[in-house]
Length: 563
Image (cartoon, rainbow, N blue to C red):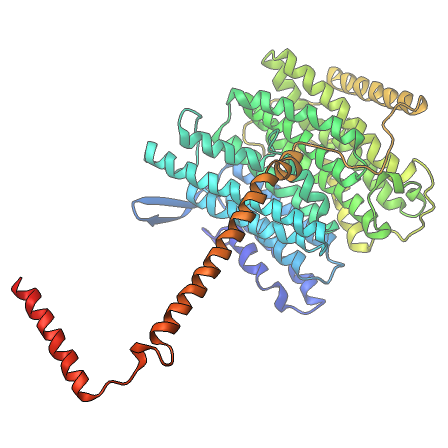
C-alpha cells in the first residue's frame, strides 16, 4: 500500500499499457491490475489525500470516507468481473477502454472537489463509448455517437454548474449542495442525465444493447451508479428526488414488458432499479442512504450477471430477440442457472442479494409514511419480477424450442458468471458482511416474518398473474417490432420538424455559393483586363515615362502636404 496513491491512477495508467502485452501475458495483466488497485483501496486509511493548489482553489483529488469506499469497492469488483468475462476476446479495446472507464468512475467516487469530479466525469464518457463502437456495426457507431454527445453534454452542464457554484459560494468542495442557486440546479441536471432521469433516460436503452457482449457488462456497472453516488453525496434529502425516483421505478415496466430485445429489456430494468436508489437518496435518512448504497452494490452484481447471461446467449446464437430464442436450457445449462440466480436476485427473493438491499429502501419509505410512494415501489417490485425475473429466463431458455443448438458459454464467461452468482447468493444469505461496510451504522434486520411473508406474497401473486396472462394469451407476445420512446422526439420527430429549415438552409447555402462563384468570375475578369497579358498595367514603360510618373507622384504628395 502506498499512502496517497489513488487506486484510480493505477487502473488508468496501467490500462494504457495493455496493448503492449502479448497474449497470454495480457490476460494475466488485465486481471492483476484491478486486483492490485483494489488491494490499494482496501489497505488505504480513510481521509483526504493528494491535495493540490490551482490558482486560488485547493483540489482534493483523493478522498476516502464511508460513502466513497463502498462505491469504490464495488466498482473494483465489477472491473475484475468485467475483464474476466471478456478475457476470451483477444481484442485489446475491451480491457484498455474498460479499465480506463472503471478507473475514471473510481476516481470520480474519490473526488473531493467538483473540478476533479468533472475531469473524471468526462473521462468516463470518452472511454466508455469505445465499448459500444467495439461492436463495429453501423447501428453501434450511430448509437455510440448519440451516447457520446449526451454524456459529454452532461459534463459541459456540470462544468457550467461548477463555475456558477464557485462564483456564488466561493467553494468547489464536493459536499452537500442545494437547488436554490443556478449552479446547484445545473449540477443536479448533469447528475440527472447520467442517472437516466425520466425524459433524460433514452441514451441508456439506445446505447447499452448496441455494445458488445462484454462491453454491456461494464457499461451497466459504472455510469449510472456513479450518478447515484453523486446524488447521495450532493443532494441527499432533496424531496424532488423521491418523486423522480418513484416515476423511474414505474414507467420502464411498460416498455420492458413489450420489448423484444432482451438486452433492451434489461436496460429498462436497470432504469427501474435506479429509481429505488434515487427514492432512497431523496429521503436522505441514514436507513435510506444505507439502502441506496447497499442496493447499488447488489444491483451492480445481479445486473452484471443478467447482462453476462444474455451476452453469452448473444455470442453463441447471434441474437437476443425473445421471438427467436427458446429452449436454450438444453445447450446452455450453466448460463441458464446463472440467469435464474440473477433473476431471483433482481426480483428480491429471500436468500438473494436484492432482498436484503431493496427491503431497506421500502422500510425507509414506510418509516416516512409516504404511502403513495410505497405503493409505487410495491407495484414496481411486482413489475420487475415480471420483466426481469420471469420474462428474461423464460423467453430466452424455456418458452419454446427454437431449434437452436449451440455450445455453452466460453470458460471465462462461465467463471465470471459463477463468481457473480456466488456473490448474489452469499450476500443474500449473509447480509452482515455488506451491512458492515455501509456508510452509517446498521440497525436493521431483513429476515423478519413480516418482510419475508410480504415479499413472497408479492412474488407469488405476480407469478400467478404472469401465468394467467400467458394461458389466456393476453400477455404481450415477443414480436419483431420497434417500440417508440421519448427518444423519438429528437431521433425522428425533430428531424421531421426541421426538414423545412434544413431545406431552406440548403437552398440558401447553394444560392450563396452560386453568388460567390459569379463574383469570383467577375473578379478574375477584372484582373484579366487590368493586369493580364496586354493589359495597361502590365505594359512596359520607357525611362522618360517613368520620370514623368515619378514627378507627377511627387507633385501630388506636395499638394496634399501643402493643403
